[in-house]
Image (cartoon, rainbow, N blue to C red; front, side, top):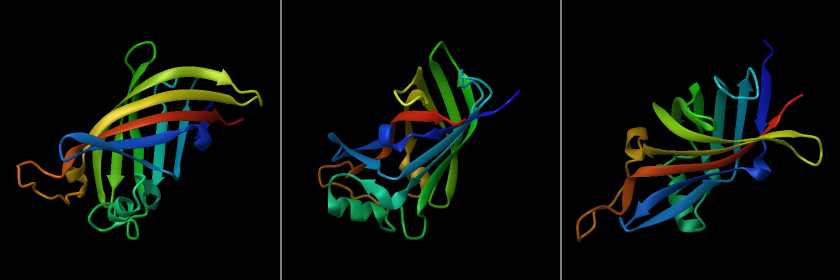
Length: 177
């Protein structure tokens, strides 16, 4: 069976993360420079092989000082580790438009298995004749497991930044012909 290749449409895609700050509100960040590829056997995407990269130096939380700290050795160490990477090990259909995406996430020099929930929104042709597929991706990781351990203990108890990080993505892929 022929393999179909898909690539990320970066102008219609975003990947965000959310971390609890002071344990009372979420701070949202994103990566401005991302890329992804998928290989499928058909348009259902069952069994797809998916890869994703984000340039850690493109992290953006709308706060220059915080972004600089996230790029430092306390977090992503962007000079030494310029990319975080994901390689799928399974893309399994759970229901009509719900999938489980499993794979290995590498941040810094640590690779761990992760599982993400994916909602497949379908396939459409755009006005220019391109075939596009849309997905919403959600999951959660523990940043400490990837060596992102910086934190500060608060006087009142608790910590400044949560270890649990929520991941959210809105992804549009373009079919390659």
